[in-house]
Length: 274
Image 1 (tube, one colour):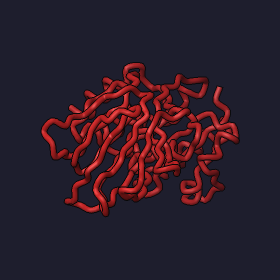
Image 2 (cartoon, rainbow, N blue to C red):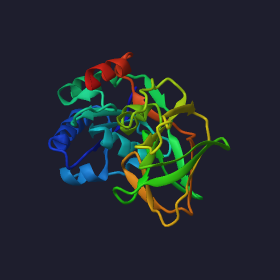
Image 3 (cartoon, rainbow, N blue to C red):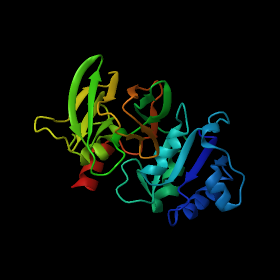
């Protein structure tokens, strides 16, 4: 039985705050509702950071917006609470509920729900930890039309040495995002694998790799005086140089999503990508 819910929204997306208001007003008489500071400001309420909602006993997060809203909410939690996404965007692979169905769907899960766990990736630049990735880690040139040279190591063994615009390292959840657009495979979220996809490689033999999910990945830049950027889930970024080492491995705590349909992934691929 759900007793406490957190609500977050993308405040700059038309209609998202309005839907968030409807959800909050609908739930307030039934249970305790906590609202992220940005949404709370727009609604004239008191807010609570998403990262503190677990300590308050929140059972799940309702994210109103698109995939970016869901990814931002998850990034703020070290041990993510289950998230239910309400779609105010376009494709939306992480948002299963349309806005007009939101209240009905929320009512249907108040007595309990199933959770899908999706592994995330921890990311370090040297010894500095970045936010964990639910979708992907992208290493890309900092200057358009400039190429990178790098080595990729998997569990201490050299996987690739090549020149390219960059590299996408994706979870199964992220396989339908940037990695797919760059030519990577679509991976069922139940598969324990990480996808490594070069971006516009300057080598005909270079192809995407699917490697075990527990692999420890290391990336080194080879060209001196070349700057690159590490981008996590399209939400946070960090500049790097050839002196830096990027390390990536499976995170201890997964992302968690409220399961709305048992066959949701295959239906979603067919309906959104065909």
